[in-house]
Length: 266
Image (cartoon, rainbow, N blue to C red):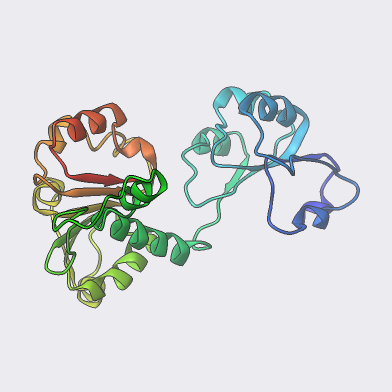
């Protein structure tokens, strides 16, 4: 049965979509579409109360209280791969279907991750600011001296679809690749990607470049704290294309201030 065949109701689309997909819903539904900007949390909380379905942008939190306020709700469709912004188990316990969009942006995210590694290693943002602020006074032998990737150790924290796609691109740089994941990959996959599994402690102590691609969950929230930054190599780089909550932000600021790590790409 398609959504349009169910009882009429209100569908909330909490932010702009690409194209005109909102027009695919049956005319029997009232569609509340925020086509100019992503809804503020309060606006979403109010809009969802009469909804039978909602497309949720990842900046919006769907808490048990929000779920309880929407007695007609049948489905929450998260516009993204991760869905830590939705209390999905609570929703499922109440008979509400929760969906996401895996593998839609795998290659794009992987390419962005590689770009962020290169920008961090070669200090591109600093160079841009130097020119933008008219502070370039001439060439110096050590001006914005970055770090070569070839021969360095790349550590992957999380190695699902996006992490594996990123490794396939970046292994061409001649890096030694290690990873830590909730589940060890098959030996065939490890051989194909030319990488090896290590413990979390080995990951943070051995990596010259450490990339976070993991989704956020209760087990890995604030995995990167000041204690762990102290175990990392001096001058190492941390790049996060996963969820921000995996890194304790206040400790990251302290780590940068104390030169425990060399750079961060976010």
